[in-house]
Picture 1 (tube, one colour):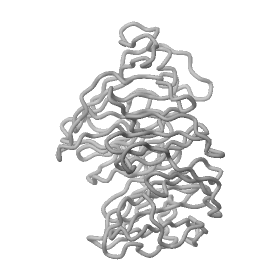
Picture 2 (spheres, rainbow, N blue to C red):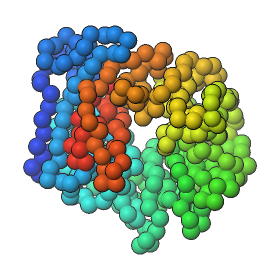
Picture 3 (spheres, rainbow, N blue to C red):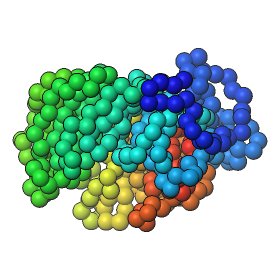
Length: 401
């Protein structure tokens, strides 16, 4: 399929899928059959190099791989139901999650990765705003580039019903209608002329929650905002409170989790600011600090938070409703929710874990993680029900969750 601004298949995109394996489709989504059945199929079918189940979990090969040559670098812009958007060279390509086939592509030269994909739209951030595409056809629906040249970069995007909300590096929020681009409201810059540290933006029913730490570390802003009007919702916290600025929506019933500090976690209602429960995360050794930029993860009725004591990282998993501990694991850094499981790194590589028990579900096949131009390893990216692993700055291996 194609539409204005989108071309079905894309120009000259080479791709290679894993060996075709006949499967019985799931009634709810036939195209997800290969990805959803990967754990069972890889054990039974020869040539997939999967070990028998054991304490370390089964080992699975990628369901598809791709090299985006001649582009020098590729990055995941967004992932969502059934598809992943990857920018490489002069194109933005949307690929089918299960087998990697191109769905559509559009001309593209921006390099911002924190977009949002729903079943209806793809929001891709650009230097002065964002572009909205029809998720299915690739038609360009709206463009908002209302920022002045040189304005702080877009660091967060969210879609609430038919409204797009953008967050800039200075903490300013603004909203527009996804399919027309009509501006709705624009808020104040929370951090003035200095970029905020660790800004975050998440969508929830009817609104968004945004946070970020002030550059002078005097505190953080925490905003809960109605998406249609921009009016503030209560948060239950003073205007300037110190957070580690990591947030995640627990589910669409309006529960939000946050790390209030590096060793404490709490859950509140996004619409009212009511705090439901909080937990101090028990860590031995040195004073705990947050691990990198890992956010809390909400999945399958559980809440996961990563922390570090000295040089040891720890994951703790709690019941969503009341915070009761489920399990904890040392030397564990969660990457994100991947389908119904948790993708995480441990000393032996990347694995998928069951959120209910902490048991290993699958070990990803051995690979050498790509190193970016700065010498920093590129971590895997979760996109709906797949994990995208970079094996070079422009090549990926994709695993089913």
